[in-house]
Image: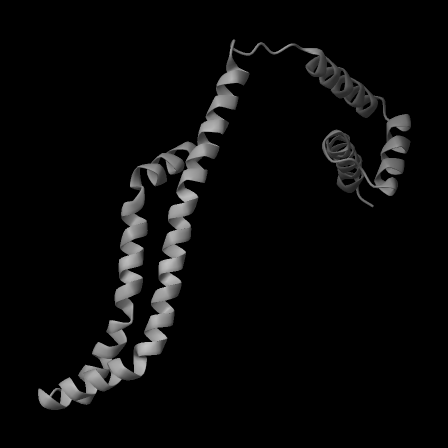
Length: 168
């Protein structure tokens, strides 16, 4: 082994030890990694000091009091309650939209043969090419979906934009 590799190996061990010390406090360690770290900390004073200072810093942070503004908890509870009420008020409207969409599909399937015949008849009478009136029949099926989409878009645009701004 050359001199550079001998110097790099302990530096890698120290970096690994520091990473494992941090990981131990955040996620925990597997038994094998914990055993390696304990052995390394017994042999390396610098890493043991780093582990001790990390412990002390975390202990100091746990005991530090963080002052919150007065009334923060009650304001937060109020906002959560208000948002829950808003969601409950929107639920019947959404149920109605789903019911209307379901009825639209049922009626669309039930009337499809009659609408097909109507489009065929109009296409023959007006001498419209078959591809055009078949395309018209397909677009006819998009009308209920377009109306439902428009209702959902117009329903509460203010809520949608305020929700998006709160997530940022």
